[in-house]
Image (tube, rainbow, N blue to C red):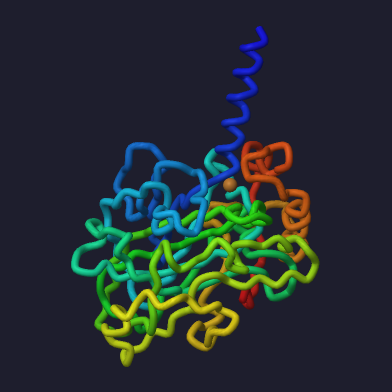
Length: 338
Ligand SMILES: [Cu+2]
């Protein structure tokens, strides 16, 4: 009898731990949606590389930091263009909304050098950052909280990028456990695209994964993340500048130590309007708050108490949100996310 009870408790704990993590569920490029694969299931045709677990990647030197947990090459390389809109939709391991609300979203690209992306080994990739989103400029919380509320996150591919096959590495870092070294949760994803056009733009610098982050970076070890006035410093390189003058030499001139983005020449290269949160296309208008500040207030305040480890459901009220959440917020959105 007692052992049965123990088993039930154990199973329940395992289930809620899985629910408390997540993965990239789908990608939409200029309005065409490509479903990803449920982690550890038989892969179907997708441009999103299949990972084998919804658990986070831990540790900045983890080889899985490139494309996620034991990521397999995907079957499809899907069309995109310079300036394409790419929208990323995340889900929890249980299929509900993404369960975390604190930490950055960052997006990188890498040329699939010498081959097509369905055959490219991501450990050789030379990555350049094209977007980053952290705290909202109006101090209403993190952009990641909007993902938890069921929204997708959109970026614009660089308008002058050269034609060819690329991996798009879109990543969420969840910081609720990042009060100690190694506590940050990395959720990398890789999507295989073929950029058309006849531009010749290349990035001014590239980095490797692992390599671009350190476990003690101020954006990865964040003991003060829930303190009032906390200002986030993005890890990794600054957003790359893409120019035809950079040429291919710049691409191979890689592995320079990443500069902290606070000291780097950052935002001039990035049109600040290029990134936006948008509603999940399938969501229906509901009786939800239409003001962004109102609807963000509740997730960000719940995050304050959500400082335990991700899998600890007792300190994480999000598991219930995953399981029972009956609706999605639809909200009017303005620019100025950076
Ligand atoms: Cu998690």
